[in-house]
Image (tube, rainbow, N blue to C red; front, side, top):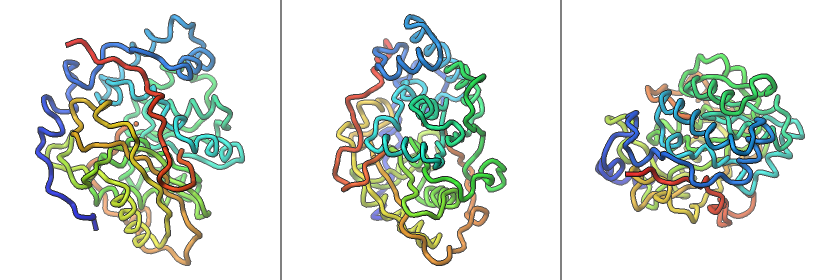
Length: 340
């Protein structure tokens, strides 16, 4: 059960003006320009995509605006996809090496597949890297953004994590060593997060140290908050303790055991999430490692978990103690707020 689930915050704390989901560009989470493109991003677009240095910015802006019309997530409007989030985290070299050793990764809610491209560019075998996204339009625009339809051999597929009949997800059952869930779990309430986590357990191998890693919106006062998109729903924001409790529940339901490492980033979420984050919102960074397999899994199989009407959106951690800095806040995407 959730730990001390607090009373839901009023909706105006989460979205002060317009509702997330509007395609209106006069919102705090739509930036007109990119203030700075980091060197790794610039290099990726020049070397991998074949763009000239002076073409990169305009190309990104053009495709970003097309993506806004697919679905106007804040991560699109605020250029969070330029973070190349998985590569910023200290476990990234370990993830890369594991993929080179023929392990498999799934990027859930992969958006354009930017982290997939970064992994492959840095030497991961493309066939070991998979990307799943609710909105197929983002996958198509990913090929346009990175101009690599002709050469990228990674597996992309459209899926709703709650859809137990999805053939692409079924095909991955028991095969993933690593699942990257960036800006993913925080989209749902506690019960639905448990459902999603149980689904991920089904996708992962039974080997020790199979890992779910990522980052998401957390809160120093964990609990349900009004949903940013579905007015009738809520979203659960965790602190490290509540996140560990959730995985204890997942373990009980699936007959598995997990070691949770989680911490808040030093970077306040309100620095990036203007307009939809409260003063208590933080960025939660995590790695959840599978312990030695237990005897027999419980009955919460891939087809047995209760489904939800709310599908996912499409946007590395050291294996040491949970207090280290898991997120390099200095490597921001360098974006500038739109003009008022």
